[in-house]
Length: 129
Image 1 (cartoon, rainbow, N blue to C red):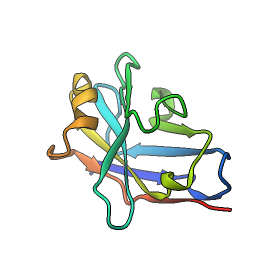
Image 2: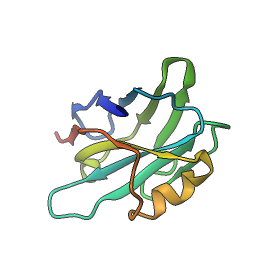
Image 3: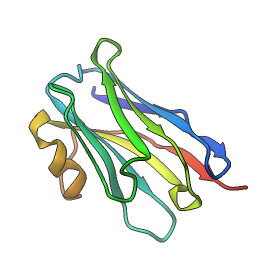
Image 4: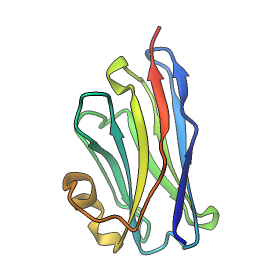
């Protein structure tokens, strides 16, 4: 059974940092596109950052570019999201998703209509003073 488990969320002050982890089980990440998505109450789901686990190529939404960095450790079967310079508008539940075919990493973030191979339960990030 393909599973993704997120961790690392929490409460942080504006300007602070958090690192989220997305650990995979039941499959190996290699050859998958992995993406981080977020959804705040009353807002649409947003593709934040996505990565090709084959070559490490990444895509990030304009709203987080320069502040968030996605990376992967295939040996640990884990993808990370380093979030710096956090803003109150970054407050949301953050989920990771896996899609077979690492070359889809850009479309994974831009097109919310995919049927994911795995979807995590999410981790809450709250940015507030």
